[in-house]
Length: 213
Image (cartoon, rainbow, N blue to C red; front, side, top):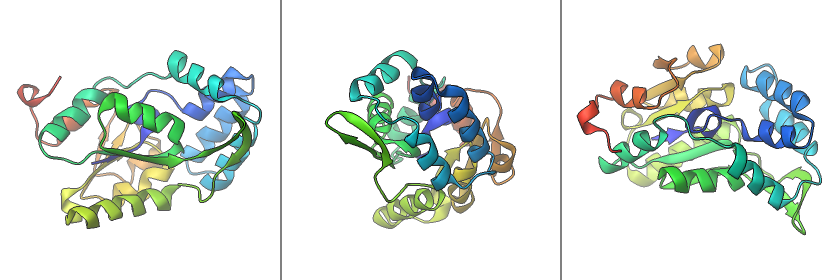
């Protein structure tokens, strides 16, 4: 199972929360929304937004994580139930490793992949370490795990909400769009409108009695 993080496993868009903390939230949130609707090219939009975060400290990042980031209802149950049934769960995000590493640990993912914020002397430079992990990299990461595990697409579940999740939603045997933008909903096999990730377990055939709390 390959999952997006922002607005899927967590309720937030991390970059929007970072921007809001330093007073440029409206500008960045608008770019994020347009990128997730597929109106802007992801890599360029990410670079533009990260540039606006220049000068933030690692301490600022931790404060945002501690004070603002919230798990989606059912996130732990979703991952823990799949893991208990032998499913390899991987978090793949167009966001940042600072957050995916912490969220993956909190929820129980086996691994996490995301973009790396360039930090020099404890301060953000406003750049992302290349190459950027966008839509193509998400599906490539998924396929690498498929090869490593020796499985086919029909044994893969992908879940996400935005335009940069579309390639993996299409490539997976089961693509689930979670409270998605319309462009992502159109690409998925299943659409969940309720903000509770246990709904994904029901789609996959699990019952309440199967759910690991």
